[in-house]
Length: 421
Length: 162
Image (cartoon, rainbow over all chains, first blue to last red; front, side, top):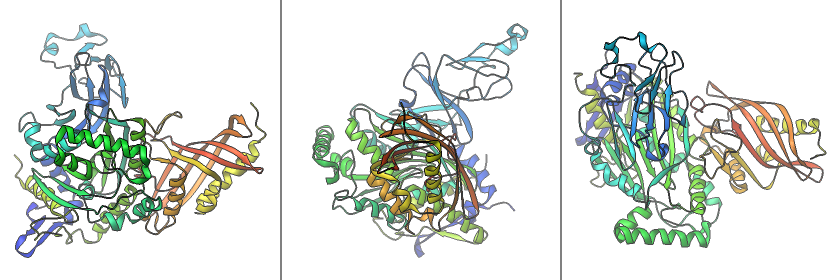
């Protein structure tokens, strides 16, 4: 049976109904369509400039199932190669990260410089002229690599919209996060590499699902309330926005402390002074209104299809890729202003770990919820529907409505429904 | 460098600790720590000198958060551990790394199996303890649990005390 994309979405504004067929989470045919129509056709986040700061720095990372080398050459230029030897295909670089002058495939000892050029191999004289032309034996670059303010993305097609055009309406929200630093934001302390036994789109939804926050994370809120002064008297209140191209965001006030820039009493007077100074600098740089928005509103942003920027009690980046309809690999990072003081950095990372990550007080419960959803689809995969209707008839969808998810699903549906070229 | 503690005494202590965790006797487990103790799980594959100020740990608890971690794990709203997973911890290769009676370092290797809803995961690695002796009893000043795995993609989360 071929999956017919037309039966995947039930979008009926007149009835206020928006539903997604559960087959979208279980059918291998759908996953194959997603690989071809989404992951091979969209800009995908690769990494941050601070991860390969010095000439010769490199890291290896999987992006949509492809092994990539992300490196800064001696000339300072950033490049991305497929991590596969042009000779027989073995991974050329096996380290997670490092600094060096060349990559050497150990199988037959072909060596490549940081620009991907074959520079040495045993028995080179036995190769004919025809093999030396057109870079036949060089590392293959990803078709496109572009960056926006230090965020590098890859695209597996040579032609199409440039990165800025693709990001479109999301740029405003990316700027609100990156402008928190006066110098540059940086990735702090490496990658959290974990996984969920659940379809990747469940994490798209979960990453900006304001509706689940209180029921799923009640034990997190119990914990923060256990320490006097850990919260301020601010309600979780805000809006959901469709940013176009499948990108969407929720923006809302919340009671927790934010290093940039909402202090809480438990942080103490010195931190309060520091946060006030940070906020004053924001006002000086951007004016009162934008400073207030940056300092006291939170943002959960999804860049279609799978790049999440959550600017909450800390800032996290997250990507996730399907291995199978019911399995995904997650990469998560912490982001911070480079010039941040050690004291504020400590508060930030303390904040991060109490909510986020595989050992936090919240993420493990999300992991559990998503796995249980996936398991539930086994019962009704043929006929069942997921409901995404909350707030459909509202002109001003709220943070705990589901307009942001509908924006994602419409773009997802448009892309998987297109006839393959 | 001398500490008047034997491997036998350390093993008794660490095997008791593992049994308390296996049995979900979390309050009794917490009582093995001194007030003000710290508890850490560095990122998978981290070196022994990993620092939570510069590296993104999974867990970096001060004493308050450690107590709250225990409190949370006992609730049915700690969804990832309700119903509770069944776990079994194997502890071996116990070594005294040095120090004196007031403060000494101990390491052990571990394998922990966790089973829930038909899925079984394995955590393996080593622990590093700083211990002291109070009224004759061994007590933990800090515990670092190093997961000697490349990543935790298979396990997905560290919702137990491994």
